[in-house]
Amino acid sequence: MKKIENLRDLFIEQGREFYGSTYQEERALHSMEKQAGNPDLKKLIAQEITLTRDQRKRLESAFSRINAGFEIESDPCCESLISQTREIVDRASEPDVRDAAIINGIQKLNHLKISSLGTMAAFANQIGEHDTAQAFHDVLEEEWEIDHKLSRLAERNVNRKAARELIV
Image 1 (cartoon, rainbow, N blue to C red):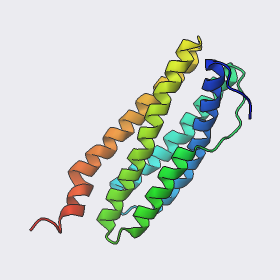
Image 2 (image 1 turned 30 degrees about the vertical axis):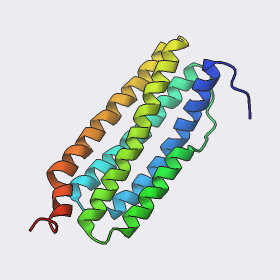
Image 3 (image 1 turned 90 degrees about the horizontal axis):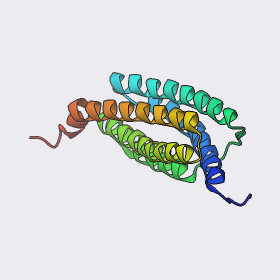
């Protein structure tokens, strides 16, 4: 493993990890889409899958501009969140509760991505890679948007249905 000697090295290292996480996330999203019962949730997951693929292509382009080739590295945080979500979703006995668990898991993944994207944009700006920083910032904005859509779906629909047996 190469030493990280400066911010550019750290930026590239973290970018590779983030890039790898997009593959991990996409595989998990396909599984969640199959398990989801709510049609609106299925639609949002499909959008997230398409968005993740598009983001990955844009990040590949951004990194190629700065001559930082991509080696796919696994993201242990992403893998842990996926594993935890899979386990909780599998234990959910009611479809509405399963949908709530799926949203919870996707939002945990998105929040990890949001924090990584913000940091990556800041690193890129600091090392003078402003176009690359903008690419990360654009992806960050898209993640916020999908996160808000998931929150609205959870609050207005899925969580209410999942809680209906508690309300007498």
